[in-house]
Image 1 (tube, one colour):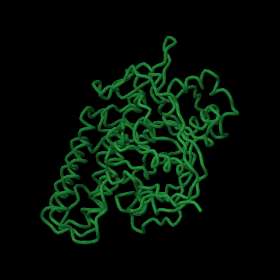
Image 2: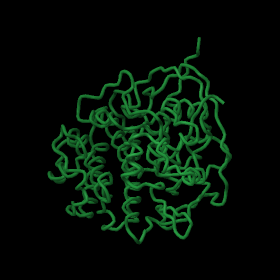
Image 3: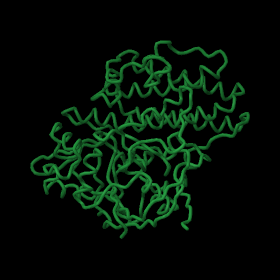
Image 4: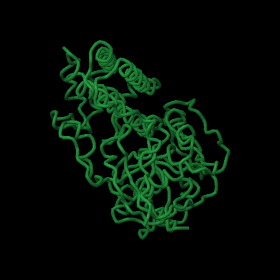
Length: 446
């Protein structure tokens, strides 16, 4: 009889905790306010290198202007916390309820996402005034009133929501800048890779035994609703790569006609390649026989030892087929990440706080499943057994998107360290590549 092994939420405690169903103490309110102020200040710091014109850009429907991200995250706190829980709260501007609503249809008709770049008004100064107004109101709620217990969970959810938008601010402005022929840098003095001339560690294979594993968050720490409930699943033995696929390895796929061979591609993927005339990953450019990659530091020479980045699911799957391997399921990924986790998993990970905003060479030989790049899995984004979305407006947060998207795991160089955990489930459509996405291969037992 196989051992039932818990694979779920180790390392999750870094992401903030749920609060017991009791009145909040003064100490709890102070702790929550400090965390709130820290996260909100980070959003402002990410906006510092941008001009008002930069923050207005929307280069495609999937991208939102930085200004909109800053307004929407404030709208979340105003809508779900302040309007309900702060005595006598008056909204900053009634029109903002429509302008900064993302997809909460139960709260009214949101402004059309593809047209967010047309919102020149309110201007950026008004949006920052809105943020200050909301911040002051949250401070009053936590220092001058006796908030009910659910305020802890609502604010914690709002902070994790804001951290998602911090990552989107970076990926969205990168896409917008890539359209500009000047190829401007978001920030020219980004922290360099510690080993810019280093080499990727030789690819190894990590063994995972067959077993019945318990997957998903156990609920003891903060998690999004789509990470639960925990459930058991039998997973056959498999092997998984010790590091991500590199630019050099992907370039070999390209040079052997990877984008020209239909047998490597899913049918939808082959249609996508031809409709979009795709011949290389997003942001790659070839100049005078040399490859370059657009980054948040501008156009830089392609580092062959760094992990290949900004791939669609179709590209990841085609490469895996060409390599004679496959993408792991999200459950295989979670088990492998848990079994091969390191004591310093978060502190050593390439996450947003490192301020590299690019994938780093994996040269140590130590498996690192968190940070660097979001990793495509072969799993469709679907609910776990027993999942039920809440019946209020917050229930629209994740559940209604469980259709036609694929799951990614692990976080990226733009993910805040206090936001990521092994059980975290990200999800995107298979054609999307503007996020920091990469490939980790899986296969049969070694």
